Image (cartoon, rainbow, N blue to C red):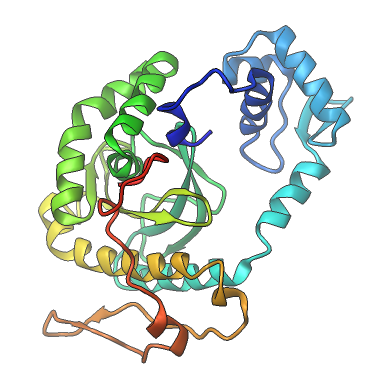
Length: 313
């Protein structure tokens, strides 16, 4: 369920479908093995309901039952669905290259994440050789409430949509809502004024983060480019001074790719365009010429520049 759906009418949501996806979300890794009791504890559903759902999902091939372990794991149909969604690898490869451009200049983990209810999921990431303290990878899930990426995502949503998401969080994971609600207005203000959001010490006292939200035409929601760095090396002032310019440049480059992602992007005519890097005089310079397609691609819009019923600003 996208956040935009929370602010609309909820009577048309088919609960059994929603619960089936809640069950599938419990399997974070391809090798995860869970029994009905574990699934029930994770998604907060009665064990009898979970039993019926896992039986149906197994019949559909979304899960596989392992008699020896008396547990379930992700099935071939679910893997096939995810593989089909990932066929547009050229877009992901281009995004990964741009994340790596930033990772080579900052000792942290740079990620491209998409929302999944109260979490964000890494679609791509890049990490510098000197990165410490962060070990996220493709498919990793992070909480919206405890990360810079999550705070940037909620700040980018239209206010009624973001408030509805927090209200839903208060009902289901109140501890997370307590972290997010007091910061939502300051996050919105920072995003409106600076184009990014920072979160220091929320996920871990040793990690500070900065994130830039972008509208994705493909997913019809906001996605986020984010970076996590050791707080001992990058305090909040240094995030604003040194990290923010690079991440805003990254957001513009990824946003341009996303806006062109349903057209020429998959015609195998693209070349890499590097992210601008800092020269010794601390000025932004471009390391490669812009290719023809990217020269024709519009600059990414600010996350706060558009408004629509689906939650965009």
